[in-house]
Image 1 (cartoon, rainbow, N blue to C red):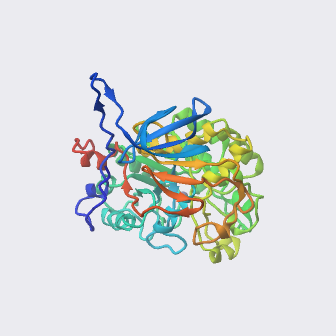
Image 2: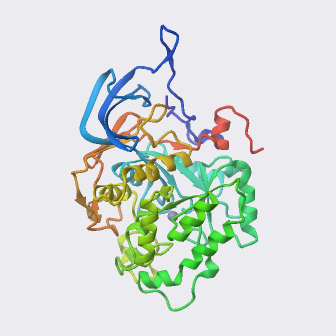
Image 3: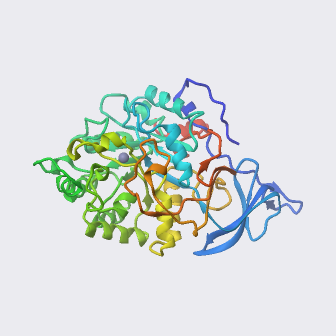
Length: 473
Ligand SMILES: [Zn+2]
């Protein structure tokens, strides 16, 4: 049961979040054994079970939870997708919806793009204007989610060294630490400060995403005029040096490294047992994919050799999370000279469709895609999503692998109206269901704006809400 009626503005940080997961009640059968609660809707199709696409029926209760997965299921209403493949809804750990303060995107538009791209929950980054480094700013941002978001939104905060970290860390869903300056973030922790900033966050047990580029390794010289020049100016050694600095961080931190670009980073982070992500653009585009500023992004697109090695590691299942780093800028801003154009590109709507096309082309297994786009990111955010299994939200997409198309940025739903993936093959989901209800169908959003602000069920905010002791104090 989801509680959606919330007061605005909010009195206490704990009120920012909807209650933790409410699992379906198990009923006692006459024999005294637990029986699954009755499904009010049964969805039939094929899903991946033990590595095979298997015909299956998914029972969903009134509150939008999966209560059974079986060969056949009794239920009041039946929706049959035939040969359609039921894939868990994805979770995108990394989006910039630029709200407040931006004009190329909003929470209202970005969450619809997510839904059309098969995503039921997003992690919204804090480098907005103003930056989310205080509880009052977090509350203001949470108010922008309610009644406007098409999917669930987890809000990141960020330490800036200015504001009271404790209040913020007790209220956010996750933290973001920038090691190099970016849009909205000028002050980053120096070598001595970084360990202290991370250590201060440790008691809160939050997911902490790090933008790991070491700015002292950026190269001075003439301004870059194309993506290859941009790669030379923010070279792989900046990623290497940042990861070396993070190597000293406590193993008890929930550290996650954003947008890894090198196969050697994949190997190093796996050895350290850290979570991390790769983006579709670093997996599918190289520094030669295009010469204009649409292809300018941080960290930069790498040469083909590095891209191919990162893709190979991803396809082997060695990259735990796929994330879009959706960061749109207006077409006008990107049409300017390369060296002064802003970094970042849109990607939340195309992330899953691009990868489904790679599955169709037999370059990627559906199993690896489901793990990296659906299961692992949901677990990292402490959300009951990402699996077609009882006890999880009935949030899933329906995929018809015959429906291939090509990306055309003008026909996507981001206000910026462009994509660096123009011409790439994509398979958009036929439908997306969220909490047992279809919210997107054939490229149209048909749901309600009832996305909520969520936090990991292990976080201080969620613990407080559930009446459990606050371990951080
Ligand atoms: Zn980002």
